[in-house]
Image 1: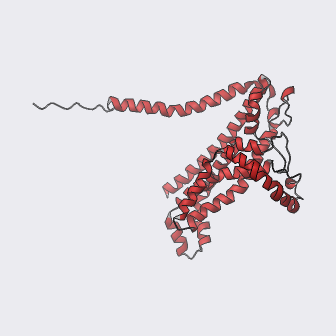
Image 2: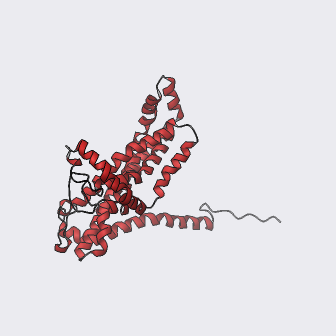
Image 3: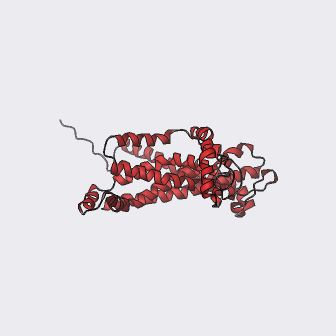
Amino acid sequence: MIKAKKSVSPGGSNGDRWFKNITWLFALTVPLIFLGIVTILIINSWLSITKLGWGFLWGVQWDPLNDVYGALPFIYGTLATSLIALLIAVPLGLGCSTYLTEVLNSNVREYIATLIELLAAIPSVIYGLWGIFVLGPWLANSVEPFLKVTLGFLPFFQGPASGLGMLSAGVILAIMILPTITSISREVFQAVPQSLRESALALGATRWEMIKLAVAGPSWSGVIGAIILGLGRALGETMAVTMVIGNRSQITASIFSPGYSLAAVIANEFAEATSNLNLSVLIELALILFIITLLINGLARLLIWKTIGERTSS
């Protein structure tokens, strides 16, 4: 006698339901962690938010002993060093990714790409030590005097050359974000259909014109996304910047002068907070940094998704 097989319910077997519920819990963990971080930052910085108000954002004085706080020097230092890093890393990263994708046709490009990606694996403290013992003296003895002689009429290149300041921090950050910009830009360039390149060349375009029209044109939003992701990395870097930026709460136009960043002041002063208000102020600085980084990374993701959608629809 042949036994009838048990019918499977539309919802699936018990194993499928267990698997679905467990993976759902795993997926739910990520937004819960995000909400937990935001909640903790807001709760612990609420004393500073209510007592100092919006004036804290553009205050310039920092005196924890007298409970006088201003976040503007740290916001300025964070944005200034990140901007210097972008000015250095963007041309290098885009030029390198263009060369690897459109010019170099041998297997060597994979080794070069691997070496560039290895830069992201170096611990930030190693970058900081290298900045103190190698980069800083080189900038103080060679680069900064040259910039002061040639461009000293500009306020950005005035003041004593010390080797420890916003320029040093910007160069370190440029090296650290270079792998991000190069790798993502290379992937964006590789996503461009080969038919566009062949069509441009068939119409008589030179290699430069082909890269400009058929590759760079369709890839602009993805490239901007790569740049903004690199900027997000630069904004949140702590150890390497702390070791070379000079750690002085001030706002000055000269990139030779010492400065301070949001991440650096939190790392330096969190363990030495003198009062509940001081601790709350440092946590509010962390909240400000979190919001800035979140907005920048969110914008980058939207641009990258836009590029992927355009490639899919085409």
